[in-house]
Length: 240
Image (cartoon, rainbow, N blue to C red; front, side, top):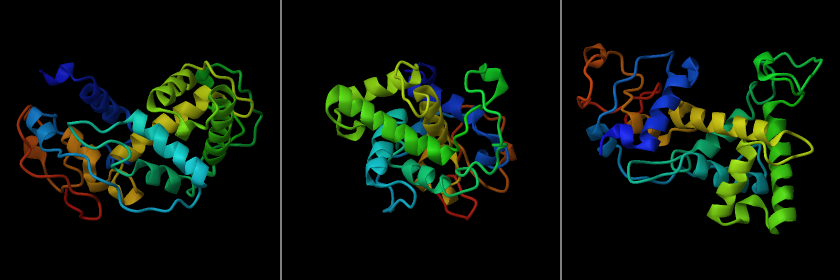
């Protein structure tokens, strides 16, 4: 089967193309994915042990359950859980990004404005997660008798799809907004340099054949469907 017919592979290649430049080492050129690179990505493993500093136990269970659906592991490589995406998201909540210090947050706020006007809520990312998780768990408890993390996989996926489509109404934060933040951070954590907590063992980079922070791979930029002979290297020198 050609790689164009692999929906997950195509999805991840598209994701890499739109992840912010700071997440992908200053916009360095990627090497085209080959079937051999996919085969060499290895089987999923376990992330390192980590105790969250921002999320409480219930929130942590939610994050782990949710991101497992957003980028699941399969026969081609590790998913969000195995690469430590939950750790990435938790650590981001303790940064200026999580506290909204990188944004103008003085108002006025017009949440009903058109998307072209940008983010219009008064909530910073860490509050979006806290209130969004609480609202989702409350909705799940009322409608299914269990919080999100305790639902079966099929029901969890159904809830996430409803959130993505804006078909669930939360009182504190729009479900669609919460889902969008979580999906965006999951993508970032999957492809960011491992120094930020996610992409552990460079599983995301191996998935798409990205060489990472190697000093020189210009000879391979224009060689498509040719196996890159070296594994990725992180900013801190870790080798994949």
